[in-house]
Length: 241
Image (cartoon, rainbow, N blue to C red; front, side, top):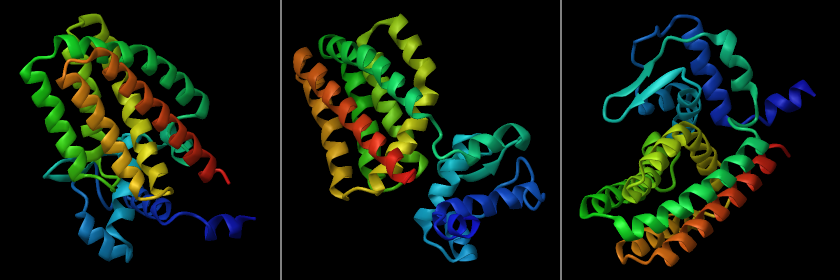
């Protein structure tokens, strides 16, 4: 059984464990910068996408910080508190994911309706910038795509003009980013065109808000959240097979 588990382990998980081991042994200390993705991929003789996924997993539980344009830096850490998280199949449980999406449906459908009525040109610019960054990161699992996805949704909430709604969504942003990391992994198990569908769904939300159509904005947001939840659920089931 142990041999089967080792043989079937994903490459990204193996790389994550190797990097984690380097940090535990003090080969790279807190505050220091890890080698580049290119250098690590050559060191471990794996693809760059596998290294990026491994680094994203380490980032998601606070072991490293990925700074766009600067590199990946090791954080102060306590492995006794994060080992259980790292060994879990997913970074968020299925029940937590279900409840999160229930909350997001309630909050973000309303936020989209309000944004369609109240959005400013600056709001549209923020959404458009996040959408463009998502396009640039399409098909990958790096931080840029996850963060741009979160920024897009938070920009919609900002455009709603509702302070309480912004505060509530702000508290969910960290958990949202975890599910977006998991969603991008899940999408890698499906057809490549699914990434195009993800972008198209965001584009439809943006277009409805730009055209100040509250009903279409709410409908597009609801459809998007439903599709993401479905893909994520299938991805979790796939990894547990």
